[in-house]
Amino acid sequence: MNLGERAALPLTVAYRSMSKPDGWRSVTARIFVDESRELMEFVKNVFGATGDYRSDRPTVVTIGDSMVMISDTAARKRTNAFLYVYVDDVDEVYRRALRAGATSLEEPSMTPYGDRRAMVEDRWGNTWQIASTTT
Image 1 (tube, rainbow, N blue to C red):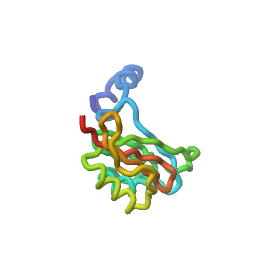
Image 2: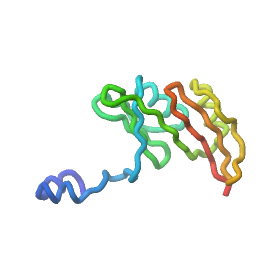
Image 3: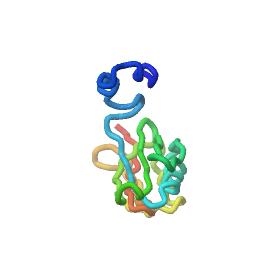
């Protein structure tokens, strides 16, 4: 249902009928940092995320089929995230993260459960596990 169709409904029905916006998952990570525009650029450069910086609301970036909301700390206190991100090429994404200023926490290696995985921390304190599955 689009916004125009929803607007034509009685108020109680219009806002009860949609549990989440079209295209969104049930759970969406949200990160509050100083310099949110720079974090957005990091995520775009490292993970190939798409999205545009918004100063009037959370910036929404899409990584693969998932969304991450990034906001400045004006609205809430700073929070860190620990995110597990599946990518096509762990080694290449890991190298991009390091070139973008992240610190290596774990070099690419195989896990006992079949994922090739690396781990980095960005300059905002977020931890990114970068993985591809082999199973």
